[in-house]
Length: 516
Ligand code: GLN
Image (cartoon, rainbow, N blue to C red):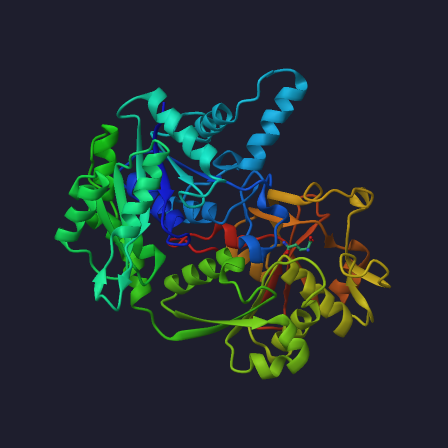
């Protein structure tokens, strides 16, 4: 049976609960413990698949095709372990399961907190069917939100049921510096712990986020008011990179404290590789100007995994990432040259719907003609195909059937078997699919493999009716489904670097192992 660490948050959101959970996962793994991490999301959607990126940030896709919260991406990147749909629990999924049981007659009296506990226990089981030694359970939202109450209550019940030494509670709070007083203030932390206690949970460890160092005296004061030993008051200083957080939490003794509470031995930790990666990150070589041409450039979280993947690549190549967020619609107004001149590379990420597509197509044309390196991801590949169709293959009006159902040249379309199915979220190609690489192509050289497995999240595909025309006009198809039917990866021969894929390689990139 796994032991459980519940991670809650107080005072305000966005102070890094996901990064703390992921960092603890890294520290436990680096001591040889097997770890699972779950995210409990207190919203009523069954999954975030249908929410706007502005409401939710990126949708992270797991190997088994679940559409999940972006924190699962952090868990994967920090622990280098693939998550599954069991690692993501929403209020909607809990209620759906309870109501289905009730309707089937399996459970006459619906019970929410029991269901949450069984979801948590399921999520603690690893791929090989064994329970993880430690399961970290991040409870979304902030203590005091009505939405997260059932999750907190379930955690409280679970810790009582499993008994001492089986569970512990880590609470993340903010210790703000108030300029007019010239002091760090502990009152918000005290109030948030009081709130947590009022629902029956006494935190065992406090992680205190702060922009400056918290003195030993202040730690003693926080501990005293909150009923936590001083050594379990852990400071989490603002960091220059999220990847530096595990290292500073290690120095503060977070993992040692958690292991002690769970009655587990504190082995030596091996963070050498990780520390080496952070050192490289902090001492980069020359900057690379990368333009990320998208629709949601106001919210950096919307393309989180893409940006992290670019960072990983830069760490590996000793480069400093100089990322430029370019609004696709602005390209439509001002033309690509005004916004892209001087860029070293152009990335067009995934997306849905018409808005901004013409700007993306213009950016791709610019990168192709100026011979600037280009990488297209999912909708980015579809836009590259549209660009070629319109400007090189002589197909006026070419587009994707998603964008114009009456296009004379739907170079991207729904597969015939999908055409009659209308169901939000139900008809997408989601999760891992194999891709067979074409020998002799750039794609095949980059991977150095014959078949690769990549994660998908899309509904539309390259239209094979145009395949020969594309090949004849100079396009290269460098990867397809093993049966050859679905186009997965394309490139251009006469270009320094022009490649785009139907899948999302960004989900597989790791800080110490960037994606090819
Ligand atoms: N909207 C496109 C499709 O559904 C691309 C999706 C994406 O970029 N994730 O096929």
